[in-house]
Length: 153
Image (tube, rainbow, N blue to C red; front, side, top):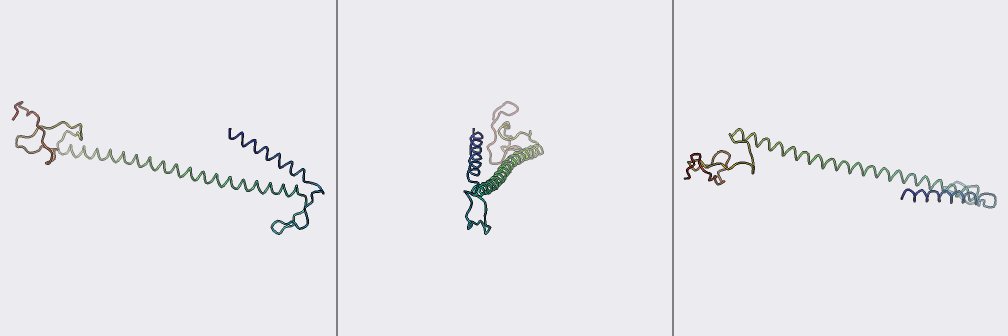
């Protein structure tokens, strides 16, 4: 829809420009002798001056559109770079977590643990001497499971 509106406005502008140039040509619309642009004496008709204004306006519009397109491209590249950085950080965090999990498993396996960590570890029975078993920290309460012989203390 916006493209159609832009096309209609562009066609209307071209029609106004052509009519303006053709209606202001000839000896009846000659420019006065004292008319200068940047020190250059302009000769011809008001239609020629109007046409020159259209050309300068079109060049300015082209320059502005190139400037805005470059800014939009730079903005898009920055947004893509920020998105890639966020994704890279997420991937790095996931890989670091996996590495830490593997290190924990390796450490637990080297201590003789079953290799399970966290909430999926089964509670261990307390040894007969009351000291915590392997893999249980000294500050943690020992498990009160049933001993292997089935007799509760």
